[in-house]
Amino acid sequence: MIGAAVIALCYGFARYAYGLFAPRFSAAFDLGPVAVGALSAVSTVGYVLGLLIAPAASARSARTTTLVAGTSAAVGLAVMALAPDVVYFAAGILVAGAGAGLVSPGVAQLIVETVRTQARARAQTWANTGTGAGLALTAFTPLLPVGWRPVWLGFAVLAVIVTAVAARSLPRTSAATATTGPVKERPGPAVLVPLLLNAVLLGTVSAPYWTFSTSRVGEAGLSPTIATWSWCAIGLGGLVSGTAGRAVERHGLRVTGLAVWTTWSAGIALLALPTPGPVGAIVSACVFGAGFMALTGLCILWAARLFPETPSRGVTWGFLALGIGQTAGSSLAGAAAGVVGLGLTFALTGLLGLVAWTQMHPRLAPPVRTDVERSVRRTGART
Picture (cartoon, rainbow, N blue to C red):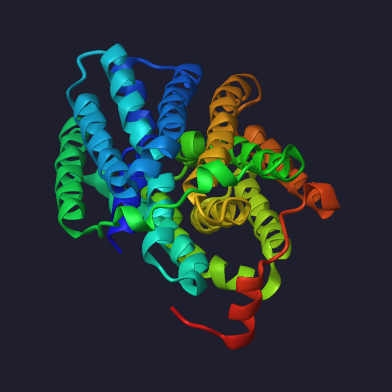
């Protein structure tokens, strides 16, 4: 799916590969843990800006919004590659992050406009696995016999190619298929707040891993090769998350979500062990990747239930909250690492993830399955 390819570009390359190269950026620009966390927060600021633009842009054209997302990622990556100092580098991070903010609402809206109703839940979660594919593709780039700048410039060139292919391949929707959802769909705070709280928690818990997991693997005495395999494991684990749509159809959002949250928190906490070892590091990364991509996919489904005609609107709300959580989480994790060390920071992060069990309370739980999903469950419809 072309939408998944653009998501792979905007997230796997333009947003999350930052953590993979964080030690090199630290050396190139003489950055400490707090500064590394702050730059990660800049990426999230760009992400939030993209999200704020996404609803209106997707309402006009989901296809154009997706293409603008790819273009933003390409430009941001190129600026980062050529940055003479940390100020220009931060500007590139901001622009690249904006592409990630635009892409998920755009693709989510495009799926609603082009995929039949019974297949949308699975289409949404499988498109979301593009992040995992992007991470897997970038995993071994630090082992290339060149500096990080040529690698980043290569990312930019690949981004241009993916965006050009998307421009030729993404379906166009006519004005007749455009929805009037933004006028009609206005969920009240009682149903919207639980989604936002879930997304903020997801962002806060995930940020330390994206920013500091590579550094933690090195701190635990493991080689750069293990760090690379761990990053690859995040991406490969993320590919499994496409099955979350089927799990939701069978068991519902709450049961599926809490099972993933619990397993995911345990995977994060593995990096808190004094000596996780190569197996522990790779297992942790695989569980993190599968859990994060599954939970973001469930967030999309949750949002789509609240905004069935215009999911780009619901995804924007949810991912905006996720971005707020990641902005806070990156900065807090950097500060905590400077005081108590990365090991204890990961232990606290895993413990924080268990707060998701508050969703057992009806007021904080996701909405029940829709009539369409009940029908899919009964008939066993396939994509």
